[in-house]
Image (cartoon, rainbow, N blue to C red; front, side):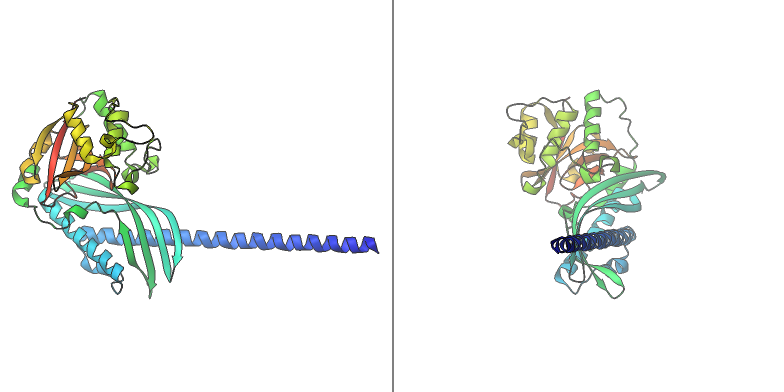
Length: 367
């Protein structure tokens, strides 16, 4: 009798274990399938929204842009109004520049997805490439990339997914007032320029550009996985990483030695991580000198003197708020820059900085 009871208990335990294991396996399978479905679905939705929005921005298609947002919500309305301003700015800038945008396309990397109400809240990285040509020189295609980090809420409205909320650090935020772009004379000067040959740069400048290209984050080549250099702290959450990146570029790429004032151990010194202090240090240490200073209208002609490895400092209300490093020039010799914060790869140096209150420091670095 005792043997029968023990066998019964054993059978019960084994049966319970098998049922529990099967339940866990089924739950894991259903959860995995559900997660994959959500990820794939959200990725496709975000890609379709960006493709439609990019095309609308390029073609000034107000109707398509309007249909991408739920303007019955406060945040949806704000997101729409912001993109509308950005559309106007891009076309105002292109008129000043004498360029046509040929294509705008975005690569998406999903970081996190949460179900929210009737839709999803999605965090992702976007690397957007802009192709453009100059008037009268349409065969030469130029491009630049801008990397942004998005928090996006989408909901289903009838048969369409619409944006109910969006946040990202916009590279054009300092230019949406459209105050000071007087295009015609500037355009004629830009179109009269020729391409430049930077093949004779010294090795330190070349290495500076190579480092700036590899670690420009979400704007970089996909092979680098859109990452910063992990040996350095990312200061974006603390107010900005532009000076930290510029310091890395000059130290790691340009072989500038650290000093007592300009250094990085476990974290960066003020001159290493603060944009204003970085500019001041570079000038007063003799490692750099001023090529020109002033508003865009005052210094855009002088900007052609900049070389890869030099840098541009952007001043707002008397204080330097941003640093970008020169990495090349386009088919008209127009200077291109890389930077962090909103990550940029080979972007025209003034794009996103057209507000009349902004002044520029064009800085020659002495390698």
